[in-house]
Length: 235
Image 1 (cartoon, helix red, strand yellow):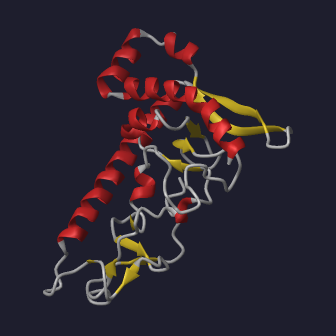
Image 2 (cartoon, one colour):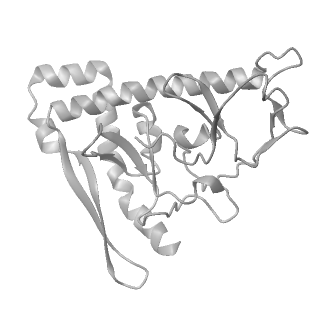
């Protein structure tokens, strides 16, 4: 899973070295995400995200499967970030909202040192005068920890889908701005036919874990594909 997406110089946060660092309000500027056409998505986000984006699964040969929100038809094209950096009227995935902070695998808090929003003169302080975590930083860390926990739950969810052999390959076919055919492949979705054929015990287990609701939200999200291709055609 591309956890380090967006981060140019991820640096471990150190209360001694970064005691004077502040984060300026970004004014909801999501320009940093304009160059990607998908981002990882936690299962707990499916219901809300399904109103805006098609939710797919990627199944890399050398790693675990994971869900994504598809943000554009072409590589390097996020159709939900406007020219002024504003995120068009839709749900903003937590993967995007956590930037410029991130938790490393060992739970070390890191930040993108290359992000232009950091300052020593204005914005939210990361540490107070005593060198303790500011309230802003505490809230940020709580968000990062919650996100990491939800991504672990999501990994368990996708592993279960593979165990039950519920994923199947999928491709989107559409027409480009010049009328040329475009195909976006390498995606996977839940096979609704196989889902309906599961033994009752497996269905009950999916329901009690909350996974069945996530599956239904994923399947419903596929109804947003025509709107996404229209946005792509209109830029």
